[in-house]
Length: 66
Image (cartoon, rainbow, N blue to C red):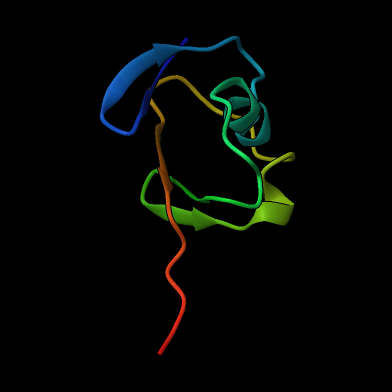
């Protein structure tokens, strides 16, 4: 199936989770924040968040400070 990752189309296996996609892309779980279809996905929920055909995934640097 096809999902969009940071504005590029990629193919992933059916049943791939957000955590698995992070690993496949070589991204550290604790180094990025994630959004799926415009909604923030907390780190603890990534393993239980399956991707679906057409999903839009965004990996970004978390912003801290004040």
